[in-house]
Image 1 (cartoon, rainbow, N blue to C red):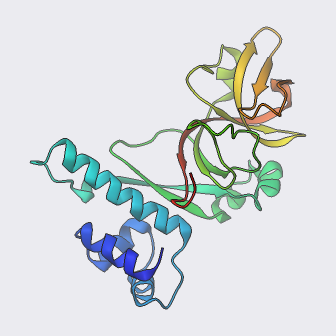
Image 2: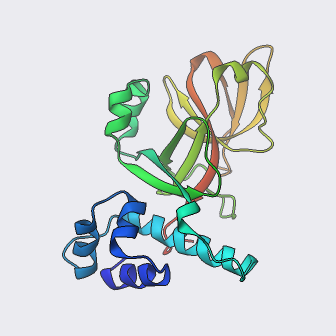
Length: 221
């Protein structure tokens, strides 16, 4: 996103520089630099304000008599483990200082999110079969942690895809197609047909997440 596009979106949102800076979580000076073209606009910021505009347009289309009140939007800054940070996350996911040191991505919603949230950057093509359900390399996925006591019951794998933080295999983005509750074994499936299904034991899993939403660059399918 260039500085002219950023400024145009801000005006469409009818927000002052200080207002949009507060929404993003930066200082007003940063917005001024961006709009002068003196600083590069981070991709996470471009994603955020683009989605903010889409939210506004969607709500106005649903009820043109009720304009969107930005003061009612709740913003959640979610830590991001990008491709370069994932090795560190695997060994330090329980370290609060490490999590706080990660970059964050702002998400908006009409209701307050509850629970532990994390963003991951997709690696590889194992979940890309060319369909709209695919997760492409570089996609940012917003995930919600599943408490370990819930692992003892049948997972709702027909409703969600998952991020599995495996103690040896690393961070996996997969679809679960079976959960043997008695044995504590889950079967993982890749959308890409070139990857075989395989089983893992939940005792070898450090963290388990539902995938809530996906962000994708506009220049990719």
